[in-house]
Image 1 (cartoon, rainbow, N blue to C red):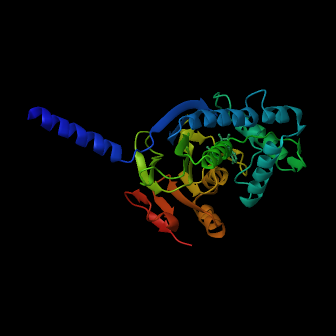
Image 2 (cartoon, protein in one colour; image 1 turned 180 degrees about the vertical axis):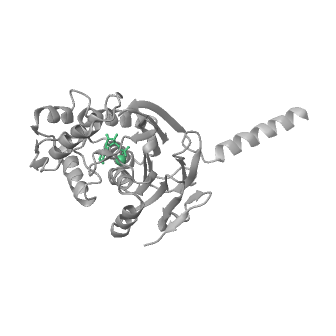
Image 3 (cartoon, rainbow, N blue to C red; image 1 turned 60 degrees about the vertical axis):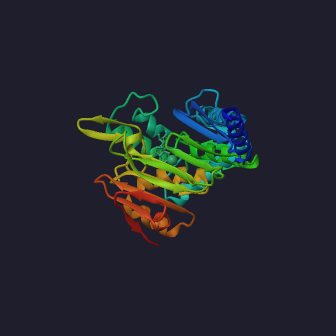
Length: 328
Ligand code: AMP
Ligand code: MG
């Protein structure tokens, strides 16, 4: 009798486990690239992680400003160079964004970033003459791009504010073309691809700019890029003043716009990354005007004094203790 009962249970168990739809397994990979820790996750085919890692490495190899074999490094050294189609296209996008953001985003501020020590970690507050001399060089027509030939005058390029978003967009395209869903987190750059196998939305935490270990709020998302820029991500302090890695080309100093962090949500990772940096430089008022006149993105602004603003498209997917909604 006991044996029969056991057999019956076994049969039922086998039957039910056979019937239950099998969810694709989640696979995760961590890597260090583009000066940050990256975490990639996919559902199903784990080989998509290795392909993504190879793509990230190959983008890094052409776009890094510090790697002496990269295209960008060689252009900065030579002052003039024929670029690959891909790098020329990205530079063209950067120049258009510089125009669109009235110089809040600029790809040609590498000399300024170097002057303040952000490229080496040997931080310093430069004397005003040094800043003025770099600003004078940056005032002119610093970058020309004819066909694929780039010519620099008085400036060097740095794609640090756009490269991770650009790369996450490339990976998203690759995964999408193979029908793979997953999520990438490249430092402050998150990109979701497709939807989760169980149909539940992606949940992305926004880090508090005031405390490493806590989150400010959570976003419930479909497929999108969500990119955060903040002074807290890299900075140094001297004589009680905090200097962050995002430069304001109108002063030659690290931006001090009253914002502690900016998160941008946009279909394009490239734009999300460039906009988040630009809006951080702009400050609340200019950022809100920019959002009102630019379609295609949503944003969360956190001010130095802890106020949180989110644009109306996020009001149902952002959860946070308290925030003010910005309308069109
Ligand atoms: P992100 O973390 O995307 O906001 O980018 C910040 C990085 O972009 C800095 O570490 C610099 O390498 C570079 N950068 C700094 N200021 C600017 C700026 N105003 N426009 C474009 N790139 C910048
Ligand atoms: Mg950026």
